Length: 307
Image (cartoon, rainbow, N blue to C red):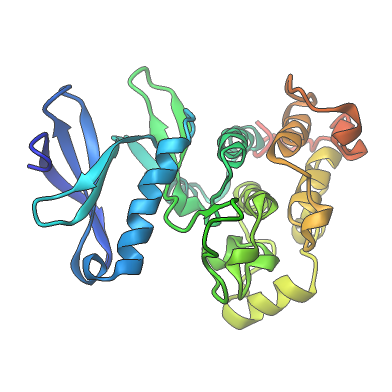
């Protein structure tokens, strides 16, 4: 039992720095997940601080599309832990491994909910910095619906001048999805770095391939720094909706200044690309880039990925 309240039931995940257990909250009867620092990580002040910092960040971000924090503290053995809502389903990584690629409607819904999560996180001054299929969970609710949940704010950055620089002279995140400005110095990553990751994720989901193909390691770093990714049309040899092409080009632009100015504006552009209309958001007219108002009529005739 943890904190005289949470009965650990089964170990459901873990790695070198910690474990995740399914558990029952005796106070409420709810099923929850308990994440605990373990092993050598529990003796490293920097890693313990990062763990506890993640709990503090989750406490300030409230969104139905972010895995919510229930409680946090330390065990009797002085190990930090956090209690999270219990999710049922699979990660987007697992889903993509099985399916190969997704229909545009499904990929659009997942990205839509991710961007809604980012709207809240960025408003709270938090940049995720590690959005990847492994950190996106497709949660099945009790009524049978699927909702996207953003996971793991362990390397998140706080947009606060008084906060310490985290990630200086280091690349934090999952390399294929990190923005070029994160390479070698993740402290430089701002909100638009998260938009780059969302664009890359959408590209991967609807095409079944990465923007830079099979490039890895140093070769991928060089490509990200020196070359814009190919358009979705160039990469696949097929013609895609103009609004989707624009959304991906802008979100995955090498320069942050060429990406959408905010998650709200990216969300409007995504909905235009997928549905031909934008959301009811209070965005100043002058803030909207002209490319977000494309009609999206140039849709592909093949429906296998479009519906």
